[in-house]
Image (cartoon, rainbow over all chains, first blue to last red; front, side, top):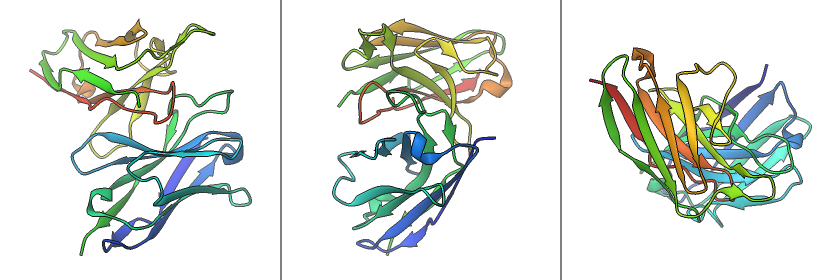
Length: 120
Length: 113
């Protein structure tokens, strides 16, 4: 069974840092395209970052230069290092899988999300 | 960036009736080499992550009731929910996976009239 479990969320002050983790089971992270998607309270979905199976990465303009996506092959986990956090980064962060074909597909598996709150 | 715009923002439909949600992309998401539309639809219920309903614009995900259907091509797409059931109350999103950033529509809130 495919499962994604996020952890690492919490309350952080503006300007601070936080690292989210996503533990995958039922499939291999390195063989798939993996993304982070966030949802601010009461708002819609916003794609944040993707880690392609080949290792390259892309980021939304709103987080570029502040967030870093990575994976740990030995632990089969995806991570999101978030630096210089701002109040508008407050959201539930979801880890999601985008398939393992030639190109990223739709998000076919999602975690339950972890809440990040940025406030003083 | 490809901008996805849904309409309406919300709608109320009677049980057993049909709900129609539209999605327009700012540029075509039809990949000419394989003639596939890189467009998906998701359903999100309160407190839950989104769940994919439709991909390739019209292919229903396994286990999704056949009252959900998707149509359209290039820049204009529609999600149709026939015979609306109480459990269909949710927010629906379209999303393009043609190119990063993989943008979503703003969402359409579906309620029972």
